[in-house]
Image 1 (cartoon, helix red, strand yellow):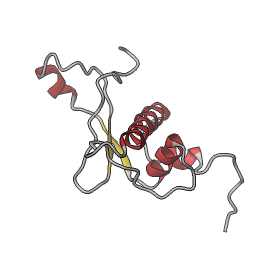
Image 2 (cartoon, one colour):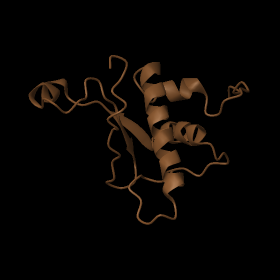
Image 3 (tube, one colour):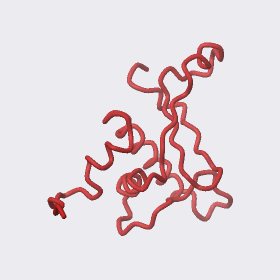
Image 4 (cartoon, rainbow, N blue to C red):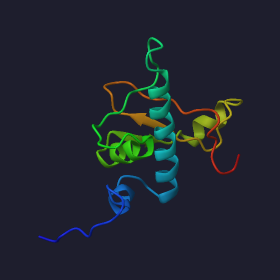
Length: 120
């Protein structure tokens, strides 16, 4: 059995890149999910939450680390909108949006309007 090389980051970046189609998608997905996790922690105690809570148990309390662990466990995935559907729906404001979906039953987390992508 091959022994894994010790790194500073767990899960390793190579494992995370296997879950997405590019490193840019990994950055966008992890940042979006980390913001959602941070929003969840900030709204605790205020009543009903809209944001899906963290889907993995983590030793770390940092939202970005939790987001990476969710991606590695395939609990947070991405969904690209259909480009043909975007052309027909004018005025929705998403040229190249990425939707982070947390796997909590049938709950999906919608994309924020401020994350339009690199061309915005």
